[in-house]
Image (tube, rainbow, N blue to C red):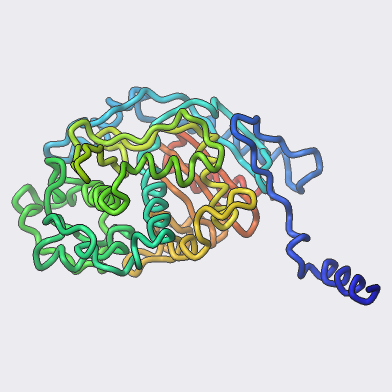
Length: 384
């Protein structure tokens, strides 16, 4: 037995056994997050404090009355109006974690606020759970093979795959919940007729950030799961990671559909007409920890690592975008001084979940002026 024991010890020393990996901390439900012990990790505390001060000093410049901020932020859109719930926001808040331990925390991390397009990364995850469960065989499948009620009829729309919707390069054309695809974030040039009668892009060739098409994805996934997506997220993920019961995922007030004889709300993937995910900083951090740990919460595999890998691959038309996760690849949205393997969720008003699997680093920040996020994250990395 001694030679076998010696071999095991040798393997441990060489780092080949998984037991040598840094243990991650996963808090129980309603538990206070553990602060890192002094000298547990090597970093410059003064530099990290300066990064936090930078985040606090650069609060999002829009109104704390998010109804006003939304109307002002999207006033260029024709017919834009508030169609779902909104909520006045709090001040800057955030957490910086290493291997699940808190290095820094600021603001009210338990406060529930709107999170806007961070919701898209949760929506993407619901699609991943559907593929893991076999409800979707492959994201390269045409959505029309799953949703046959006319949403994907026509020469153009019938070509659209789940991947096109997830990468926001489908150019789906139509109307959902009274909202027309061409009226969402229209180009700076031209007017109504130009936008309405534009030439459609071949699916998969051009990325266009568009909430109507994102909401088509949410509607399609509701048809696949045959139950409301907030229920899916709660049962499949949020309850299992010990999230609080305070988060909510809303749809537009009138976005009801009937499935199996039951009326259910189809949720949104953002909040620029109201609705979307309302959640605390700490629950965002729990969600981020699952992606930091290759789909596992502690030892429980909740999302396949294969999905996470696929979701964080660059799309053909946009190297900085995967399956509703932004990627810090060399491209228009690259953050200088930050590793290229970093990926993140981003939402209006400066809401971010930043994930670095290789270094065990997780950053959640709320209500940071969006133009300052690259500098803030660079300052955080400067502390290590």
